[in-house]
Image 1 (cartoon, rainbow, N blue to C red):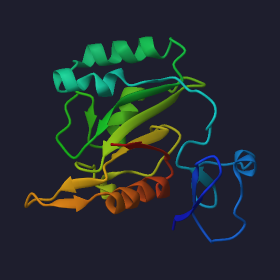
Image 2: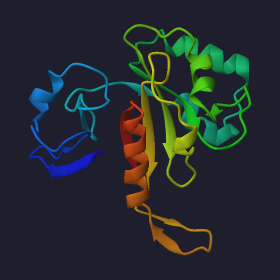
Image 3: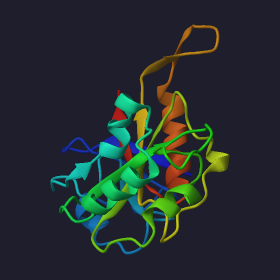
Length: 193
């Protein structure tokens, strides 16, 4: 299971899967081989902390204007153009527990995301976003593989309203949800809200 450590001088929060021993600093972490699974380190603030990466979220953030209904042809066209722009991370849309439609950038499974990605472009990372108030259940999230999205960014709120309208703590739920994503082998980005 993942465990939380103290905040480092740079403000990073380190979590790790496996046994609590051999804690490493960021310099050691970057030298470790392998995917973000068992016995690999993950910095919640990103492994490339200090480096700048260009992330385009048009297909996700733009959906607030059109309910993520861009149309299949436009989605594919935007993705092909973005892949040629020098953008380093393309956020493809939302992972949500709602019906999938090919004209929208809201996905109910990683298989649907894989179909949009097709053959990955070298040097490019693909991401999707989830939110703790309306998450895709972790039981519906397949383990990461070479064809799936590389990263899942999660919107985490300090509080949320439960079914009765009462304000509840959402941080613990967000932390557990993020742990589940890392346990499935995905890189994690946390978007505090």
